[in-house]
Length: 199
Image (cartoon, rainbow, N blue to C red; front, side, top):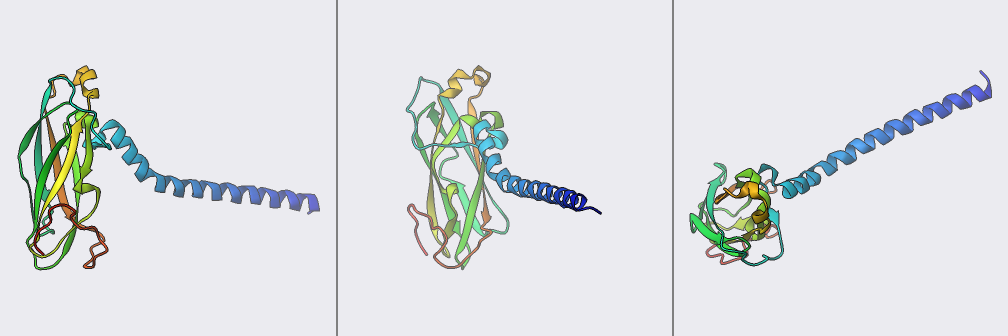
């Protein structure tokens, strides 16, 4: 075999190896990017009832009033009681509304939990925005601790321009608390920041 043939074979091998490496690297990168891209997609479209996050409400617009209902659930593995202080509220479009939920750790050990959430109907979730929510971080309750957990939200005035949503008069904000996957019994996990009592 001539030197030229050997060089061509080595060059082809290098090209094949580099191509395989690039494909594998791209697949790994896509895997890591999939989750954040999915969340961006959900927030932009309201897919799966995912609400948006915002820093401030725009202020009430017009006279249209929406009823927002609250639904709470607790995973059977989490020995907490978790309920809304109000079952529903009336809110004007664009108005900043503050509501509270009450959680109690019924066990005799500190437990950290996290809340999953969604808004129904799914297609209207894109107009539901949270400013402050206990669901943004994990929550740690000491034995017997009672905590009031705040949620500040508004319904975007963009809803008024979407005439397909003219018949929407109610939304339901649902939460389910689960035990944290990174359960710890030290002070490194987030604690309930507002009106925590007991412990």
